Length: 298
Image (cartoon, rainbow, N blue to C red; front, side, top):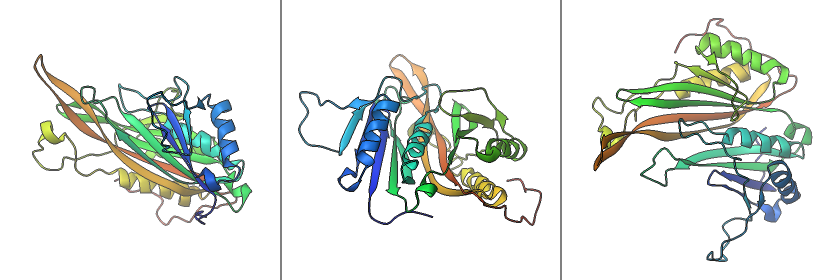
């Protein structure tokens, strides 16, 4: 059930520049205390202390300064731990009757001389659930991403990341689907997610036959991540029958490669696509009858 009743809603913003911001506390009930305790005790953050030159204008209800290393942001590729942090927060609040309802991500490049140094943000919205039991149900996050590694020619790896507990063997079920139908290969342990795969099934295309790459970059056209998103949703919701999709959001970022030397240096970017899905476990669900046993290749 999608919760949107207009009462008791809070939003948490995770900002890799080094902060956590909270809004909606004026009618958030016990959310202020729950968030404050979790953010400080579990995440090691501290109350934000304004600098001397800052004005007294407030941009949020509550702001925290994160501990060093809280956010994992790779400059070698586009890996990050915002999805994992989102799930940690949602799992904690779910135990207290606050249900994840929306999340959205974005990124900015503040330094044009270092275009691969991204600042990422994730907005996560919660609403008071009608049923605390439903709010506390396990969550699973799946992310698709393309990670460019060359611009001449434009080349990239496809990445699939999973975060969350292994409820009813969902990791084993996803492993079978990803390896058999998406050509995925499981990779070694990393800190930014619980399991990840590399796949060659994601496709990106140029926006036109001859792209103006120095101005616009590479691979600005279509992608097939939307198709694979629906395939994984069909598998989770219909085939396994124990999960509901509650959040789906996407982002486009660029990864740049430097050319030239001395006073004649420039960057060319390759567009990368990202898709994030969050599923909530549905106890007692049953698989939907599938009329075709063999999945057709995309």
